[in-house]
Length: 394
Image 1 (cartoon, rainbow, N blue to C red):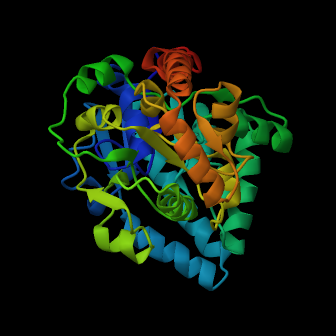
Image 2 (cartoon, rainbow, N blue to C red):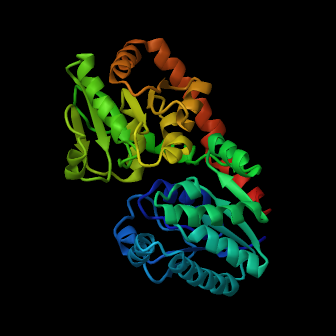
């Protein structure tokens, strides 16, 4: 059985969808058979145990920490210095090689999220003669907007993809993009969740005496979502349903949300432990799954696969998708008829669909049944585990 190293900026128990995916994939795996590598990053790793528990494998925290690396990267982009980027990359390669040799790893998995982790993992693996797997939670080269960083990432992506590598993608849309650009056949592993654990936690009912009709969103909110939320808030008002509210459960602060115009018929709840999310989701009348129609990175929106998607599908409640027509989530929910899709940047249309969805019990039942079926077939943990481990014959 081959020992592997997994490298990721977000690792359990940090507060991110990527962290939760990795937690589910690795929580039952022998901790002696892998190690975890990330940047030293106190703001991510301090007091965040309510998202998941820390994995039992050995963690390696690299210097300099994330904040310093981010400052150095920003400086390189401002002075347009690809040389500084290469220096940071060489340091990362050196650090990875030392750990891979010390831990006697035969496989290295580089996750997206950081500019240097994937190419450094690739080069370290190549120089040591071990298998490299690229795990693309987001399209690597399209995460960077600045021309210097985009040029650097595109060059490194080309080297990684065309080298002797395996590639994991979280959805069919990203697989298609990589095939069209590089001619490679990536392995699709939908972001998994533990259906058995979810069902157990869903039995925990919440004491909520509110008479509201609830559109519920659970998760982070940032510029990949803002315009979709603005449309929803406008749509709620246009429905004329006086007791209809958007309920948000997010780690973002109230001030941050208000600053970004997430106000109106909205109730913002404090961030809850992850094991309470199934009860919150089952208590919804509609679950809201948004992606922005106007964001700084439309290419990322197109291939985005929200980490909570499997949980939403398993919640047995109707899902309202509001996202661009060429996005993965619009394609998936339309293809499998497992939710209501509004793929126009139009609050009037959104209001009409909300009214229809709340009043049509047959539609609710059909969407919920189809969604639960997809949760089992595509997102349940055993399906993902088998695909993940088969990649390197563990």
